[in-house]
Image (cartoon, rainbow, N blue to C red):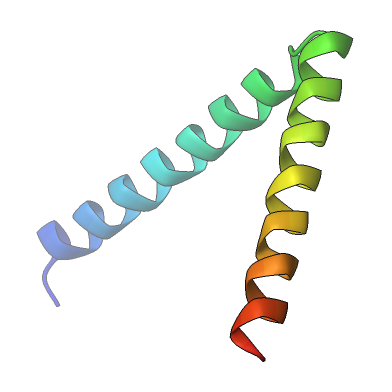
Length: 58
């Protein structure tokens, strides 16, 4: 592997780390109301999935 390939891999990995950090920072900035509404939405999705599974006989 040449130096250019190694540098490209390192650059992609660093970019991925920065993206993950940015997403985590955005998640931390949510207001309590947004966190509650997201939790309710997730719970509703889980209930819907459970109902679908029960209806399909899984």
